[in-house]
Length: 60
Image (cartoon, rainbow, N blue to C red):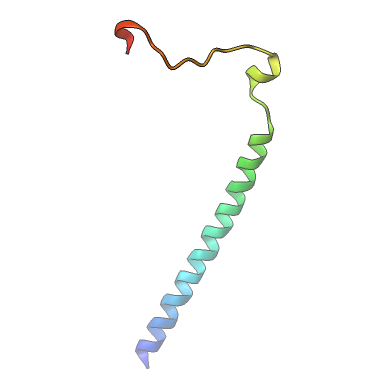
């Protein structure tokens, strides 16, 4: 009988943890989605920034 209690307690703890992770994920997900809607500062100012991966010479 005590084994059943420990199994049910473990399942309840995992359920609570899953609900907590889901809540945190939902709150963080909404913040990231809102941040994606805001354009970057260089995009709004019309600044043309070259994105080149080549670094010449010894600076590599």
